[in-house]
Length: 272
Image 1: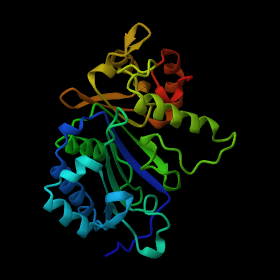
Image 2: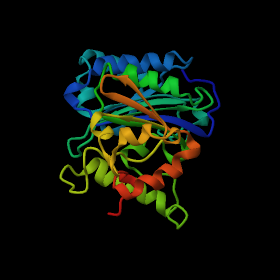
Image 3: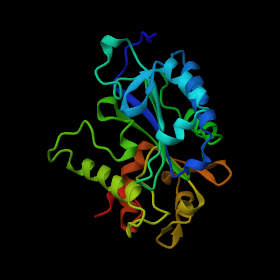
């Protein structure tokens, strides 16, 4: 069964990082993702199978239930609600809603990405904060962010430091380098001397921070003090014990990046 909806060009996405495989409730995550899609009037249609081959959701669900969901921790999981077949070019880009939980022994970060069509669920800070609170029942992230990105630029791949949909020209050089920085220092090398636990990837409309981030030195202040010193720096809300939502008005994001750059705090903008 396919979802008879014309997908729009813009995705909203939530990425959560730095949780251990052992902390994940795989069964709970699976059923949460299924219900998340169903609650928005869609049907999950495909999921990732072994060998990077996508299979029907119904088939994959039966297989996982038989194994008590142990395969999720071995290979991660991708679940998507897709439009009709004639509107799909590549399933990893042309979904209406998707969720990907990624585990990799070769990098220091396990992460999850929830992406959805902005036409189906328009951007809303309260909705995204609530989604984070729900997900934290099943995994224990230490960092996260929510963003908007064109589907053609791979919102599901962006949190993994993967460059897609960008031409190799001067116009995209800076953005490509920012993604590469995250892939190298934010994700890949546990022993990278440039990485410190208080660092974040960049400044987004919504950022999810742990205590080590709020203690980051920003001049003579901590990040928490700096945020709370000026309304244009955004607002902090402790949405769960020791997990904070930092909301930033998009009109101030570029100015805040410029202010934070000298403090070696934003991984995307480091000189590697």
